[in-house]
Amino acid sequence: MRFNGKTVLVTGGNSGIGFAAAKRFIAEGARVAITGRDKAKLDQAVAELGENALGIQADLDDPVAIDSMIKQIQESFGSLNVVFANAGISGPTPLGNTTAAAFEAILRTNLTAVFLTVQAALPLMSEGASVVLNGSVMRELGSPGSAAYSATKAGVTGMAKVFASELVQRGIRVNTVIPGGTRTPIWTRGAREGATIDGTEGALASRIPMARFALAEEVAAAAVFLASDDASGITAAEIVVDGGSIGAPWGAPIFRAA
Ligand SMILES: NC(=O)c1ccc[n+]([C@@H]2O[C@H](COP(=O)([O-])OP(=O)(O)OC[C@H]3O[C@@H](n4cnc5c(N)ncnc54)[C@H](OP(=O)(O)O)[C@@H]3O)[C@@H](O)[C@H]2O)c1
Image 1 (cartoon, protein in one colour):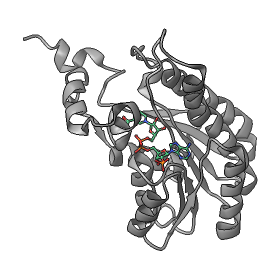
Image 2 (tube, rainbow, N blue to C red; image 1 turned 180 degrees about the vertical axis):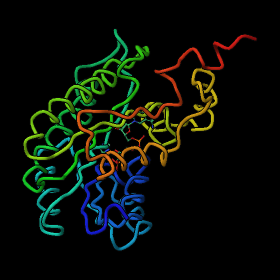
Image 3 (cartoon, helix red, strand yellow; image 1 turned 180 degrees about the horizontal axis):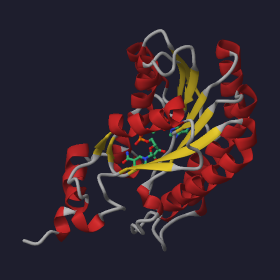
Image 4 (cartoon, rainbow, N blue to C red; image 1 turned 30 degrees about the vertical axis):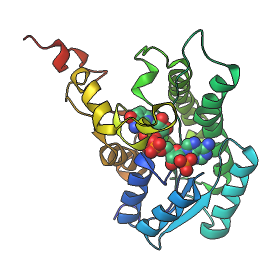
């Protein structure tokens, strides 16, 4: 039980990778605050996670909501051992057909809100605490139509290293989990509404050496490891959970000799 008596914040904990991480933290002894915008999904997640989960509805695009989220955590938990800044959105921003508002909406959630969440949580964190950010292989894949999303995830990687250098003197570690395609609702939301996860995975699998998406639980396991004392010597590092996509792309089925 690596998290006995510990307290954790998972932003975006009502869905996908965040929910899987919250489940794992609780299974290992933690009390976990999860956040999301969608109240119904939040209530359902808390019901599933049980009495060690605290649901906080918060739109992290609003800095006031971030401060209020941290205030609620302070009142309920007193302090925080772990922050998993996981909440994020994707969306198309192709050159030639993207408004400033659409571009900046992705920056606000995936970058500004991550910065403000970590900043707001810091007063509750002390020596031995740990921050994990959620990046993406999209930071380096040059995938058409993904300028804003890819820029935010490259930004997350850069920001994590800056955080690590600023916080090392306080004994707080900062690391990043870098998922590749992962089976979560992000693939069927917004502009992708109507798509199915099986259909999307099927269309992309031949470009992934393992020929499949990751499970949310596989990404969560890496994030929980980075947050744990098992990673006590690790800061400013990252774990890539992508079935080999960026490390061994030519092992993908699409490149294998027929
Ligand atoms: N799935 C993948 O293939 C993949 C690959 C690489 C990286 N990632 C990253 O993994 C992270 C988690 O995504 P996921 O795949 O688990 O997708 P998901 O199931 O769609 O979860 C996204 C979470 O973020 C929350 N969220 C989004 N905008 C928010 C806002 N403004 N304020 C508060 N919460 C907000 C959502 O809550 P509500 O719905 O309640 O707003 C939800 O809990 C993201 O940062 C994503 O970029 C995912």
